[in-house]
Image 1 (cartoon, rainbow, N blue to C red):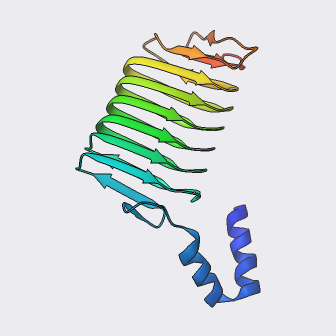
Image 2 (cartoon, rainbow, N blue to C red; image 1 turned 90 degrees about the vertical axis):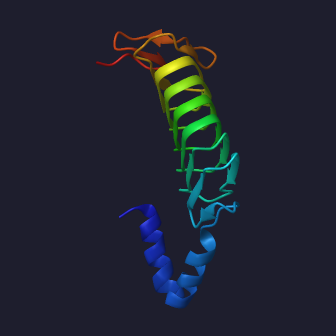
Length: 183
């Protein structure tokens, strides 16, 4: 049982079902007209600006638009598919998928995963413990603020590490910062 589920059980037993129902209705909400609870969908229009605010676990899905600007907190996901520009800004534990975009610009904290697939330009600043995969790209420029792994099988990724560490090119197509090569 996760910590979140344990807390829900404790709260449910101590405050009763009516109050728990009220808290459930008010605890998850994104600040966007595209959101319903923690799910935000935006597509088939010129642009989408989606801000999940302080909602942890928010899921943003943008498809077939010109631009998508997604902002979320922790443990969220942002999917940008078939567009010109995707901009993502999240805190920790995020999953960002930029596929078939002209440009992907991402900023995320620790333990993030970023996929840039079939993207003309992928630029990102990622925190400690993050993993980035650049596949079929024009340019891929990643700035690691701690330990990170950049999977770059076609080669040519530009990786900057935190001060005091240098990027290490591994034999398996990965570039690491602050870590040893594996496999």
